[in-house]
Amino acid sequence: MKITVQIVIDAQDGTPPATEQVAAIARDDLTMATAGLALAEAHEVLSGIQHHLVTAQAAAAAVAGRHCGSCGRARARKDTRHIVLRTLPHHHAPDRAAPDDPVPAAPARRRRR
Image: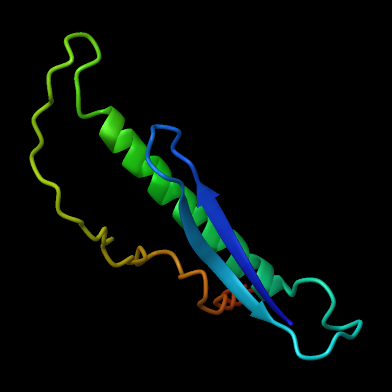
């Protein structure tokens, strides 16, 4: 058995609806262990839906924001290339241990007499 999950996005602006494949799941034998979705399969379906949904929403927002709402003139754009967002490497403060570092042993206390 092969199950294909698709999402249909209809912008309702006169353009034909877009159909995108989200996931394809294959099942050989139906048993109690293979019934339903595994957690990894459910995650794949949800992340595929989120990817296509956010892409369509961002495209719609970009089209809606191209013209001024009051006068209708086209707004200037600086660039239309795709960019990749990168973050700086995370450095830990020297006085604090990293979350994955083992907890340092407490210093031994001296007894007072």
